[in-house]
Amino acid sequence: MKSYVDCMDEISAEELYEGLLVHGMFSSKLPPIFSAESFGEYCKVMTQEFQKRKGRGYDYVVFDTMRNVNIPRSLGIPNPMAYQKLCASVKEYWGDIQAHFREFCGGQAYKVSRTHVRKSKGRKSLFDMSYDNWRVDGAPEAELLVGAKYVVHADISACFPSVYTHALCWALDGKEIAKKDRKQGRYNSLDEACQRVKNGETHGLLIGPHVSNLLAEIILVVVDKELGKEWKYVRHIDDYTCYVRTRDDAERFIRTLTAELRKFDLLINHKKTIVEALPVPLVKEWKRQLSVYSLITSYGKTSYREASSYLDLAVRLMKENNANAAVLNYAIKTLSGQQLTDSARWLCVKQAMHLALVYPYLVPLLEEYVFKPYSVSDEEVADFAKLMYEIGVETGNVEQCCYSIYYSLKRSFCIPQVKLEHIMDSDNCVFKLLGWLYCKRYGTKCERRGLKEHAVDLYQKDMDRNWLFVFEALSVGDLTGDWKLMKRGKVSFLIDEFRPG
Image (cartoon, rainbow, N blue to C red):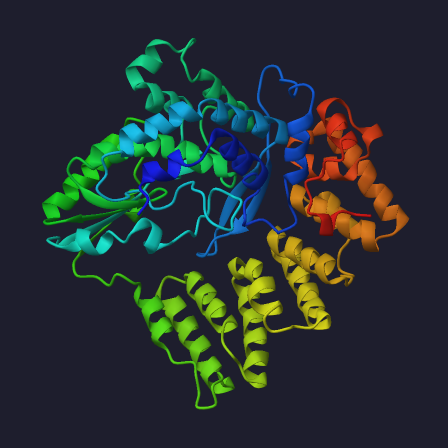
């Protein structure tokens, strides 16, 4: 079984760079139209480094995606030049970073950090938020339970937005050394590269790019080593689960975690800190109830009645668990893998559409787990997308609008409700980009000209926060500097299917 150190050591500096730059620039939570592959190829052959902006760093594109509890999470899409420099800086220091992981994780009896960068068979990216393979990482929780009477659940308050970039130097070099030599520190260039990605700010890592997960781990494994001297626990990114004998031990763990995080200017989220008396189920109760529910009838298929009962159960469990839409996500994915009768298939499609409009968190899974497996017709998807677009405009949910247009481009149908003013008045770069792609295919010359003029204006006034739309919409002659060179080099940040002809 691979240790944490094994996972780090088997990644070469070049593999790390390519994994982070080419396959880790865009979050999987974004509409699936983006790719950095042509950008990666361009970086291999460019004859000079990207120009360094004087003074401050680069702003970034923000995209709000709905979380399972129906509140938004802001994803960041970095400026490509700044992101390349950050990935190159991590590559430069990769040997030191590997040594850092060996020092702070080498003596672990089990893998404490459960989600981290790694090479995985059949996958080009180095990070997967949902990675869970007990055969590779083991399942230490069952052993950690032995002798414990309480479990502590805790997490870091706004972890990525709170990371202090100087803390990377503190973690890698030691806080005393790093603070003593602030101007000439060994890892200052890494610190500066982090700042440039986030508008020159010293606080915060972007949520979405995979490099942020690696950078956070550099800090958190130092905390792990201190906690591991006394406590038995596991960590998923910034979520801690610790097993203790007494309630006093539970309180001491919380105090210790608070103190260790404070060394790096991080705070524990006291509102989400829970102490539970054991035993508690290893699998969440709602998941257990859904997993043991029999969906198979005597005919070998799931009937309308069984599918209806299963979905009703999922809705009830969702409401009983603080309106956690992850319950519905699990149910929809489970049903998509079943053999269904025609009437059950019809019900699942309609219910999934209904639930996705009520809980937008479910919208991104529709294509893979509903439309494709149930062979939903283009006409039916079109009717749904038109309705979702209307609701998205009414409620201000740009993510719904974006996915509506994504489905229209994917399946080649028009959405008459898409208006030029919606696109131009929006403050969302991804929506502007999808709107431009839509108008390129279905819009009038006047609409295309209007968006082109809008892109020219944004290029002069607010390029950083709109770079994806502006770069894709403008031609070589409209751009200057590195943007012009990239455009001339046939760089696009869209997958081939969505590039306009």
